[in-house]
Length: 506
Image (tube, rainbow, N blue to C red):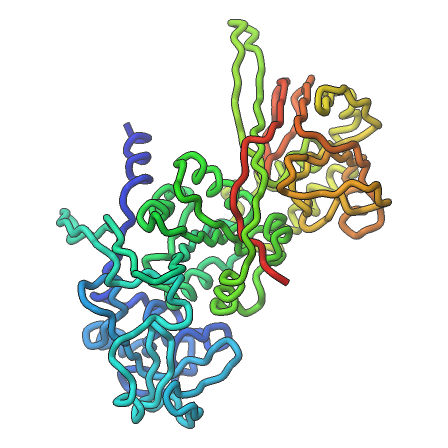
């Protein structure tokens, strides 16, 4: 019964938080944040201490004694409304990504930006208070309007519960703008980086806050992906903020929900390896200062490409009943069997431990180093070639001594190593959309370390449309960074379609 309720909640309507009652206050950090004014909107005092706060939806700032008054006197962004959208002016100007602060009307810089000049939290124009009569009341949502869901397009359903009023999103009245393709942010806070909260705050300010969704242990992507159905027939763009495992989770859910039209998926790297993000040109890790406008511009000009999706079928016999069991998993990046899966499994267990108190990319890399060194000192996957049989397109392949077999669909593996491109050119070309998968061998954990610093080459075994592996012993295996110990089974990897993803242009 609990699972049924969770399933219904997952696929339920998108919840709408009422920000009109109170602002969504965050601690004011003058070094890293640019999505808020530099003075208190109530008492006009300059904010220079961390005891100050800002609303990450509308940009209003206040010191601690003035928060209650700001909540009662200053309205936040109206996430939904039934009238034409006007500018929502907030006291104080906010610099653009390049640091410039100029008035939209007179193009002059602001000489005293904390004394009454204004910023619209929808179109993000700065303006002198003296120039306000010269601008129309109507707001066009600015440069990124084709990515934003206007508040007057949202049709909510209001209900009363025991704990108060509840709003949910039931439909969208899409704006009649050619090329309107809203961007939905889906972030996993548990990914390897601790930057998720900052990213969520930045995009709440740039977009409509309702477009920013969080997934995790108690919230699957199904609810966030309801957006794809709501904006249909317009195409929805999805920015997945997380690691390779989070990306695979969302892509699998898109397939499970059979969403039409298929959304265009892009990635913001918050994990430890981020191999898909690297392969698509979105970077290896978050920048020191996250600039949301720069991210939106890159998404606007990104190319749409296809990524092969592979079904991985596990078939095994029950000793007690002679019944054949088949389980299917999905691979987008890579599958590996042996030592690198063993290292990933050790890291995964450490991350799930109650002693894992803080998510940090540096800590995660240290854990990978620890478990990798452990496999150098006491290897547990020697003789892997004797524990499995490899069949490529129906032909049995004789394996050399290896401790790992890697099946590669994208350019990058192991936090940025371009395995197939290493070594002597053999005339074969790797592509994530050619219906071929690359198979390589790795001889040891130390060999992995050498590959990561460019001091060695992998063993190129071949390319194939279909791969079969007969696993004879319990062996560690991982698919897209999710590891486990696999009992003896017949494994078949075959192409099952493609997904549309966005690739950053150079």
